[in-house]
Image 1 (cartoon, rainbow, N blue to C red):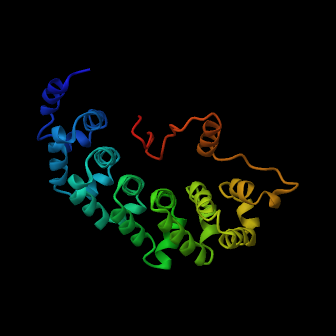
Image 2 (image 1 turned 60 degrees about the vertical axis):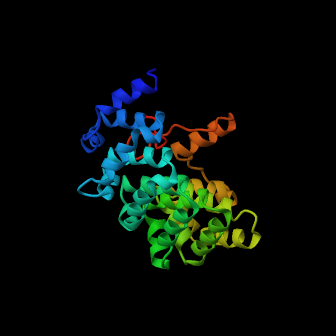
Length: 270
């Protein structure tokens, strides 16, 4: 491994070419690694050049490789250094929530952002009942809802869960979505200590149980949450990612390297 001076000499070759490198299928990995292992001050030029991108940071967030570099920035830079970057991304939250790549940036802000940034994004998600229903039913945006129910302050998680349960049909629709498995299970975790909300949620699933049971993605949810509805029926296996998570958890392994929709691990492993 190069020492700090050697690293600095190497990354100096990247200056003025950050956008080009970010959007390249191969060299973006070099940029990601530099951000991950070097001091933020040593790679500050990367952030500066990204912010100066002529098409804006939202364009990078929607790029197959650009989103990876932005994720590393959000993970490793101090919050005060990326406040302008995050503000620009949050200003375009609606267009990013449902984007195949942009939604991962929104998830990263919820996972690594400050409380005010988390709350800003949650406010966008549930600005109206229609907005929250759209997020819950959307294949990509539903993953953002899962992160909101996982990383926001507990009181915000509970408030979001209540709002979701107050919207007629939202929970069953989420259970039917390809990307809704983890978000649905997470919602039940959030309300697990509230018997009234828990009964309300189970009742909503039960009312549309036949429709959910007939779906590829909904049936495993019923198996986990309302197994009594499956008596005498063949249970569909859990989705592959969920099986991996459950299996590794039983072995005491904390991290699951599962590929996301972009074909690489959302935590940075490619």
